[in-house]
Image (cartoon, rainbow, N blue to C red):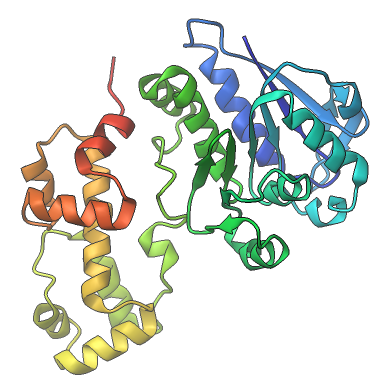
Length: 320
């Protein structure tokens, strides 16, 4: 079994621990080698309280943990800023990283990896909320806050909170293959394993809601009807505006020109079709409004740095 040491501290984010832990534990139901052995550790063994007051038990004091370790995973949470000056915690993370096959962090746990000297010269991500602070504090790290998770050699970092589940699924896929990771995702009833290059937010969440009701309804219409006529003349007519005024107002209220929003919305629709259907690529392109496999390929490479075919092979769930 692969040994996973999960590092926690006072006021850590509970889901940063429980999400990955449940992924690893569920993988044990399907993995032929028995999966993973989980161990929570803190500076002092015993009760550690998460943000919100829930108490968990740290099995071992960090100084008593010895290798070998398969995966060292550091949680994040509201308590991280208070622990960046905790010399014992940072030193033990650095020590154990040297005994681990790979090291990972969830959310702003990346700050602790950086304090331990593990991210210098590497690419890393963290929660968007603290990304600017991370970039200022650790200029030797190439920060990319747009990503769900990033792997740089044997060091993995993830974005905020629930993306720790995506990270853990990626680690399981790296160990046992994408099919087993997809089975775990289905067992946990979570979103199918997302590629690390995907943005932290889906398009409707990432863009602000327009102030005017007609544009809010139009935005929802675009997302729900990727195959419709979404050219600017048609959208302007639906919004009862001139084309020029519509383009200006839509861009101001959503932060994206209408053509760019439509393309990204259709790309999201294509991604969902690739994950949930066996449709050939020409049908995916047609139903998502992208028109042709060639356009589908170009759009996918532009937004997710992966081809549609590779995306489907890696992330589509296959029913038994």
